[in-house]
Length: 306
Image 1 (cartoon, rainbow, N blue to C red):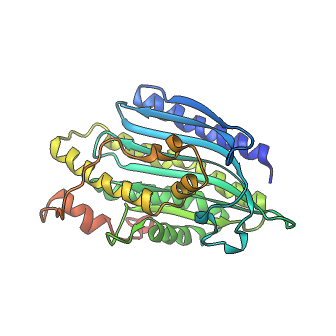
Image 2: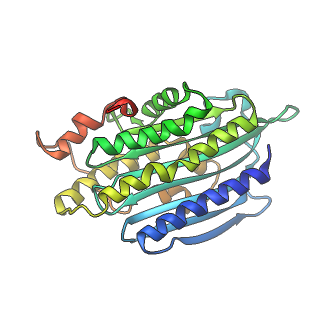
Image 3: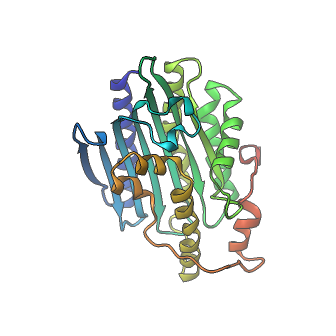
């Protein structure tokens, strides 16, 4: 595993994203460098970039981390039990942006590499990542554009990857206790090491580099749309689903908390304002109801309107 090449790419990706979003927002991201000293449960370093109370982003966080641990936590070995007890090295960039305007969707992206180091055996290296879109008010052209951007990033590496990773995303970002998806999906992959390290790394770079192309056109279309208290209230209600997923199901969040990671960086994905209501249902025929009937269900977005 070429750690230097990986670090250089992840740092550049993080800087490009936060510089671009900071310029659009009108204020810079705050930067916090952190380091875990040798001998701690989790060793390593990282750079957390956070923007709160912005014109575009009510909260946005983009984190780089490079960590080492003595033993894989349960969230990492549930699907790879043969690696239980192995030490590990992990590196990557993860972001969540929660816009202020309810017509601009929340977005999540991460790209990462993981190396398990079982005693007396060769390292087991794999890549993971993806991106997904969580609108509060649905627009077909936004979902189509986002999914086509994901497809275009993957197509050079094999036509089968987008439908495979799209389905994986639909299944992963699903709130089983609510029986509903978190949003309109995107792509998700894990345990990926096909055709060698260089091929897998190149594919992961393509996914990371596609993020701004996928998200910025949506931001530009929606950021100036007028909204009122009704829209903000629905946004806060739907953000509750985001919190539920991250704390109950998200493997990255669970891995960070179980391995002794930096809590502030791990929980930067939480939205700043959230509401829960008891057994609330949208009124039939409203834009809020349309989110459930037309968008919170699997659709072949990349093929629509083709």
